[in-house]
Length: 582
Image 1 (spheres, one colour):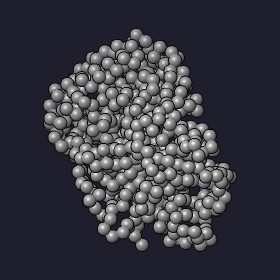
Image 2 (cartoon, rainbow, N blue to C red; image 1 turned 180 degrees about the vertical axis):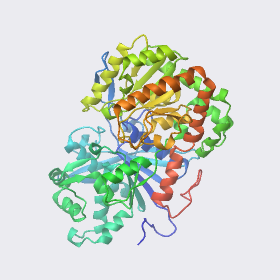
Image 3 (cartoon, rainbow, N blue to C red; image 1 turned 45 degrees about the vertical axis):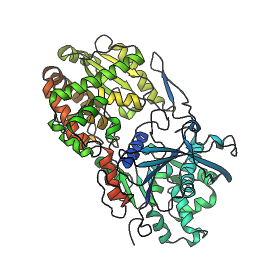
Image 4 (spheres, helix red, strand yellow; image 1 turned 30 degrees about the vertical axis):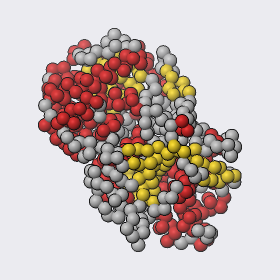
């Protein structure tokens, strides 16, 4: 039996990319952070490569959150309201799913991702805000990662089962389903019911399960156990229905009396991957019964390259937009040109910081950037572990500026407290180290920060960084990383060539005191002396970041790997500019 989906002779299947969040554009609040940004970059590169793909997500009329920070760094949130009917095209069909035994109607809005060569990847945003639905059901697609477990599971029924129904209603018959994290795993239940075609679970055969597996691939994104959606089986019976839970039990897709979405996705996928080589090993330890490979994440180069570097690449590396591998030839760009482009990107960032905060930062001062979701394992405050040593370092080597951004989940009190700690550190260091926290991190600020700082700082607890992509955005803009050896940085790090490691051996047990010592020592003895004393040697590292890391850690390479290894689109070769759709 074939290990991948084979459509009717002469046709190429459509890849349906399911993700709870997708970052489509600055004006659409349909994402919260890295997972959504990666999803948007994936679709953008699929459009550039003319991969036959569609996206499926939820409309999120209330978005994720608008972050407000007071003078002490206390975060409060308000909804980010938008109206898809004002900017998106309504799709004609509606579909119905059953939740708690009642019908819930779903419509879809169409957004188009247009590739460099004109190929369109449509994205369908599912929406339950319809008059036919109860007031509660009408809100099910409103808030990204909102509500309690009941709300979340109802949402995942809409995404998975409703998404599968919507694709069929829209005429997509021959589909490879790519589940981006476990939130959409219930689409496999919909596919299984479709495969059974009226037969009961008692009639289910191994061939039925295999038929579903051939249609599905799965990407897991988190090595943190709490990041995998799990629901009590009793709640699943209430929302999904007792008979459907029995079907999942018959498929051996229920484990330990809970509906674990990652386990379900692994059980009924023919291909599963982690998002970095290290993450593959961690995921394999978490789920030892399933083969998990690795396709390391990337970023959409044209989206995250600053205007200054876009102009530089257009002049020196023609063709880089069509084929990101050409960024390898950035190694031939003059260092003065690299320095000039970065200076313009840095000015654009500092101008925006002043517009948002009123603070005028020094263009010449060494500037660190840190922008992540605020949660304890990312250790945003690690650099403030010894404030006095930080003061001494700047007195000996030169001024230091640190720009922070990032939202905490509304229910993550520890993440919120972390923001407060950074505000407190900023006050304690005032006059010696400049620290700013920019509220309401978004796509625009992310692009300015990853291009405009001098070095990108990343300090997660190992091995909890699945991949990370902000440092990849920085690399494309000639900004080296200074990072714990975890996630993608294990693959992208060449000490003193593409950036610097905070710790020297990712295999040894994590030692916070060692991390702190390594951070201060490398900053004081290597990075700051290079920046202030040997600016052209520092520019060599900047150029290497582009030529070595920017040329590889992009979603064009990533999507090509998915097309070859995961989707197996009839064995069609994939290359930059290739048209798989015929």
